[in-house]
Image 1 (cartoon, one colour):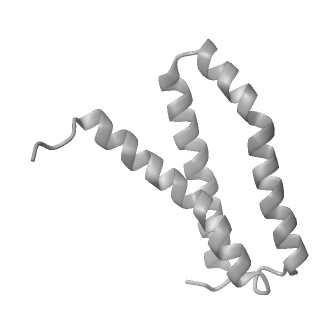
Image 2 (image 1 turned 180 degrees about the vertical axis):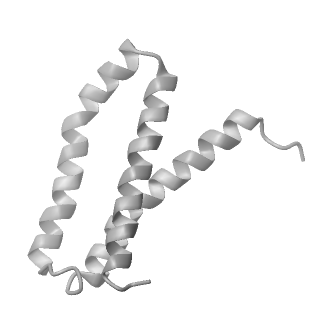
Length: 98
């Protein structure tokens, strides 16, 4: 079997790491909400706000993607996703999950 081209490997690795950060929201919040100082209603609101923000910004993201080079947006998305994932990880570890 032939290995994938290097750009495909880099993009798929970055995308999987960014998706990991988003998936953390849906696994950690419902499971550990008391430790985070939340009640179930707050967890539901936070997760629904996450979806509504995505829905509201999809049109803007499409416009930006069509107007500017896609490499710029890909790197920006990877950077922002990595920052959010790191912030969630740091917050989670500071609450003594580690």
